[in-house]
Image: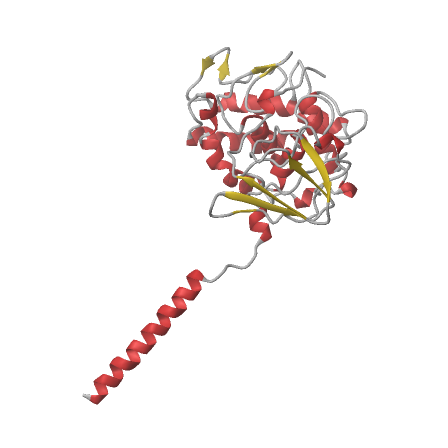
Length: 324
């Protein structure tokens, strides 16, 4: 009898210890992982001329592969067309986007990650995205320079969007069209793929037609935050609002990025917090998460930016290039 009482007592002690260990394992505070946080947060406002010496990301600091970028953005792509009241991209159509980007990377020499960053900036991967017209028609996934590729041409919507049309949309944006150059020519024009700065300058020229005479990639026409947003996509931004203010980015002479990810995370209450360690940050004159409010520059040694979580959206369709 005493033997069995001892057995039960030992079993009870061991069970309690195991349960306690299990609780601590699953409820202990997880270690800080800034690289994981960078996968979704807007790393920093990146202004200036695109030079690595001024804090712009080196190419080896971009997300490691198109595969990683694509997986991080698939949820956004899956609902991207709803913004315009159009049928969302199907799984097959989404897969076609990735497949043809790899295909065009091989034929053009333009990095697949950069192509995809432009796709997400321009259309968020909606294969039936509308054509914008601000002096020049900009159709398709990459809002190309009056290219033929589109699954929403003059209001005629193709559903499903065939692989051949998706390929044409990517070719229009990368190889260019009779009406204007694509990413390949613009990168070559700015110095070639050996220099990462050429990618950033090409993004500016793709959006607005040219780099401003000052060299500042936040200046000129079209979408002022375009290149900062593209650079952040290349660093892994997928979630939360852009921290770039259109009326202030052109005043910033260098990147507000310390060469690592920002300590960005989303709290349980839906608040997104990002900390940068550069000397400048932007603050908005409104408590809203909208980035349209007037902005001022603040000089500080460390700034914590807190803003209400907002849906991820591209401003590219609202303000496009009018020509070269």
